[in-house]
View 1: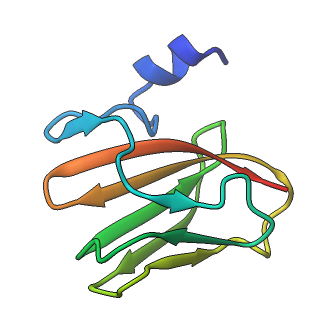
View 2: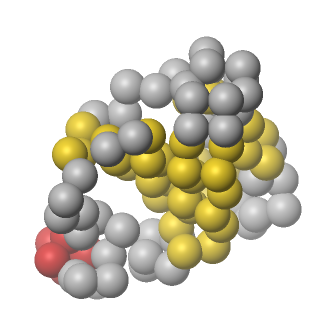
Length: 99
């Protein structure tokens, strides 16, 4: 599948209808990572969804009011993933590299 197919696919992580989609302004580090991703600062309520490049959801977590929210990826194989972060009525999408 091409990027165009993913964008137009109804089951795609990129198919976002009712929320605004923006560039990733959250302070996420390190990327690439060998294990744990941190989201700097108090982000409030975050919904984190991790997808394969083919669009398969492989992890979903809710993070509430932690000073530095984290997501542990140490059990995943090395590769490229898509991270979708929902915060209030905003959705952010970022490519994530696991070494």
